[in-house]
Amino acid sequence: MNLPSKVLEQAVNELSQFPGIGKKTALRMVIHLMKQPEDIVASMAKAILNLKTNLLFCRVCHNVSENELCDICNSVNRNKKIICVVKDFQDCISIESTNQFNGTYHILNGLISPVDGIGPGEINIASLLNRVKTDEIEEVIMALSATIEGDTTAFYISKKLKDYEVKISQISRGIAIGGELEFADEITLGRSLVNRVKFN
Amino acid sequence: MNLPSKVLEQAVNELSQFPGIGKKTALRMVIHLMKQPEDIVASMAKAILNLKTNLLFCRVCHNVSENELCDICNSVNRNKKIICVVKDFQDCISIESTNQFNGTYHILNGLISPVDGIGPGEINIASLLNRVKTDEIEEVIMALSATIEGDTTAFYISKKLKDYEVKISQISRGIAIGGELEFADEITLGRSLVNRVKFN
Image 1: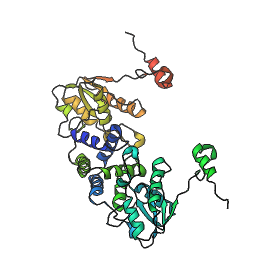
Image 2: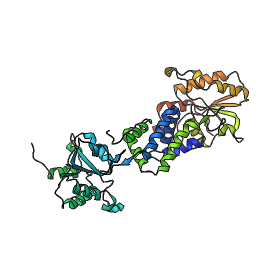
Image 3: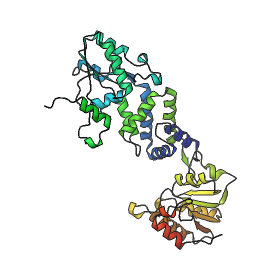
């Protein structure tokens, strides 16, 4: 693509570094920006800069936060005795959107994956064990994906937690609510049959 | 979407203002940015700001430029006697990519469209007529889209140019090179039959 200006070219190159954004989409974004008034463009540039300068990670649960303690760990309305273990803060956002959980989180920042060279030491497991030990946690919920990595990580953590008096649970797996059996994959359907629960 | 931080929320809101980018994609972009080192994020913010502060429009052809005259209007290698009339600078980029044109451009910055309230006065037609009058232009090529708006604009300009001794031409229309007849739309195919040219 022959762009008529170096400034334009630079902006397109920068924006096309985003995952899933190619040169053409980046050019569309740049054209959109060029049409905006100066203060809107300035506020966008500032919001991007703020990401690096004003964002911290909560020292308890490792969630993104603006303070040392995130809003959830700092809230008096949350049950500090329950920890929901998630892979990353996006999963935390997904669970928060359900409005069904009132405990705290622990963000692992990854899953154990020997293939990718990620061992238990690379993710936030030590700090989780420390929380369980010192904060008299009652329940640890594994909210990890139903993959080999998720299962391995959950298994590893559950083994490590055996020494403590803590209830370990796992989010349920099965066919999606509102989902037609016809479209459920065979493995999910098979497992949901084997792990059937009492009808109430 | 319940985001764990105001800074995050602001960045997501800013990025989701781009056309075709929703909250989820914006969040993915923000996560990508958070993982980048500070200098890369800073250079992206700077490239965005530069768009407003360092970009001008060429005073001759209205193309985006960093100087009063754009690189094309300023080049000694371009034929200044031929003007290719295009709708916007994206179309100019497309034509430049073909490497088949060595003249100059005139960016209309829109097309006549009474439905949208855009008349001949709203787009850069007066400056085009002025160029033709003062610069002894030999040929004006209409490179406008084959739509009602494109045709209306080309017709209006060609009528205005009748007073000057200048050749007026139009980019050819028909089936795409390498295109199967089977997949060409009926109107294009019909027109390309009616407007058939001598086989050489």
